[in-house]
Structures are given as C-alpha cells and as structure tokens.
Length: 148
Image 1 (cartoon, rainbow, N blue to C red):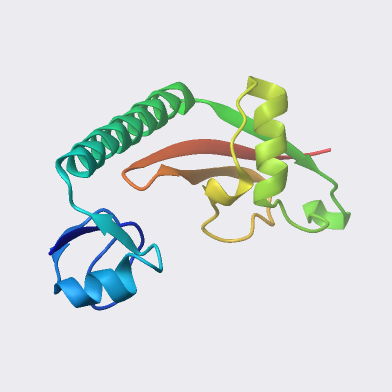
Image 2 (spheres, one colour):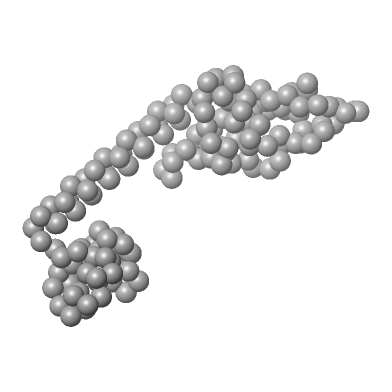
C-alpha cells in the first residue's frame, strides 16, 4: 500500500514522501496514529500543490534576502561607545547594538542573530561584519566604532 507521510518517520522517510508499506502496517500503525495518509490521486495532487507552494515561498525568501543584501552593500553603521583613559573603550559592541543602530540610521530591521561578529569589537575603528540573511545569501556591512 502506498502512503504519504505527514511527519518524519525514522525508518520510513521524511514528511511529504510517498512510500510503499505493507497493508497491515499502514492500517494498524500509520493511519491511526496520523503519521501518514493513503496515497489516493487527490492526496497525491494535494502533495504536489503543497510542494510547489513551498518552493515558491522559498524562492521569494531567497529573492528578498538578495534584495536586502544589495541594499546593505556599501552602507556603514556608526556605533558610539564610551571611552576611558588612553583611548580605551568601556566594554565592547554587541550584535544587538549594531542591529539597533542599523534600524535607527538606515531604517533596516535585521535580527541580531543574523549578525556574525568575527570577534568582540573592543577597539575604535572600522570593521567588516557579515550578515547571514539566508543560508545562501551573506552580506557585508561596515561598522564604525566611534567615541561617544
């Protein structure tokens, strides 16, 4: 009997896969526990439409990430922190502060978890910070750490 899995099953396959199982296994385990549904023509068509919709959404997310990367290209964010004696800083600049300043200065809202800092920004100067916008899209942002 052919069934379409509604969730990942360790020994059978991943969600959305159409797998061949014995009738007893399907009737006594898969169907009652709502792990899968029978692979009727209607269900197969629904699965096909659902996969097309997911591909379309994934493409839209990728396109929006690429557009955001283009917009970020060449922009600089200035983060001001307090300075002590001898030009040393108090503390360091975090990804949260960069995200807040990016929103304030350029109106772009980026999740702080997407900002990848090479190391803690403890000194004044200009740093190149990468932003992981999508698994396939990475942008580079210039961050200037200045004295307050």
